[in-house]
Image (cartoon, rainbow, N blue to C red; front, side):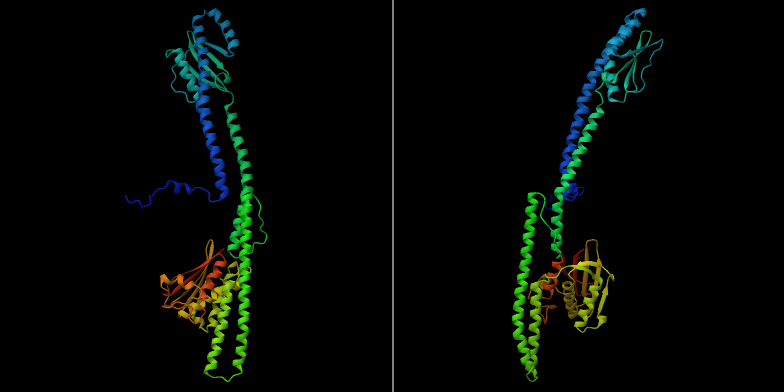
Length: 450
C-alpha cells in the first residue's frame, strides 16, 4: 500500500467538522465535556450499580416478609389469622387485606420496571414456582398479592421499604448544579474571550489599512501583553512609514528643485532636437520621482472612508483611458452601479489606474469587472494582449523591474506600476493576482475584504 496516499476516512478530521471554530465555543467544550462525562459516569454508577444493588437488598427483605406472611397464613388456624394480620401490620408497617375464596392465575406478562423485576425474581425464589403472586402499584406504594390456602393475601408495601426514597431528587440536584456551573463558566469565559476578540478585530482592521483609535489592552495578563505588543508593533510600523515618506518627500523635493531650474533654463533656449530630448528626459525623471515617492509612501497617510466602489471603478477606468488618449470603445466596464465600501479612495484609484493603463498599453480591448462576494469584493481587469507567461507573473510585481520578454507592462515607466498597485491592495488587507484572461491576454484580479 502506498503510504503517500491519504486515507479516505480520518476520525480527527471528521470530528473537527462538528467542532466550533471560535475560541469561546472550544473553551466551553473543554469545560462542559468533562462535566457531562463525569455526570454520565456518576449516573451509571448510581442507577446501574448502587441503586440496583440497594433495591435488590430491600426487595429481598420484603420478599422474606411476604414469604413469612404467606407461610403463617397457611399454617395458622382460621380463627387466629385476623389477630396475626393486625400484629404483622403493626410490626412490619404493611397494610394487609385478605380476599377470601379468590385465587391468582399464573402471570401472563413479564414485569417491566427494575423494581418489579427484582421483586418478582426474589419472591419467586423465596416462595417457589407453585405459589402464584402478582406485583403492582397503588400510587407510589407497591401492591403484592399472593395465593394462600383459602384465598389471596394482599400486602401494600410502602415505597421506602423497597427502594431508596426519591432518586429523582439526585438527578435534579445533579442537573441543577451542572446548569449553574455552566452559566458561571459562560459568564467567565465570555469576559475572558472578549479581549481576544477585540485584539483580533483590531489586527484585522489594521491589516485592512483602517484606523483603530480606541483600542486599549485589558483582560488577562497574557492578553494584555499581546495587546500591548500589537500597539507597539502598530506604532513602529506607522513611525517607519512616516519616516520613510518624509525622507523620500525630502529627497524628491531636493531633486525637483534643480530639475525645475533645468526646465527654466531649457525654456529660454531655442527649440531644437537636443533641447526636446532634454525636456523629455526631465519630464520622465519627474514622473519617476513621483512613482518612487508613491511606492515609498504606500499611500499610508490616507484614512479609509465610506466610498461608492462602483463609481470609483468607473471613474478610474475612464480617467486611465482618457490619459492615454485611448478610444472609449476599447474599454468595457461591468458590475453594479453602486457598492458602498470603506477604502482609501485616492490610493485605490491609483491602483486601478495603473492596472487599466497597463492593460490599454498591451491590448486593443480592455474589460473591467466589479463583483461582490460573501467576504470579498473583486475588481478584474482583462485585456486581449500577449499576456505574461505563468512562470514570470510574480516577477512582474518586483519593484524597479521590467520584463525583458513578451509583454513589457512597465515599458516607458519606472518599473513600479504593478508594485505600487499590489502595495495598495495589500494595505487594504487584500492582494492582486495575475492569470490568463479568456480574452487571450492578462487577467489582473484585485481582491479586497469587505
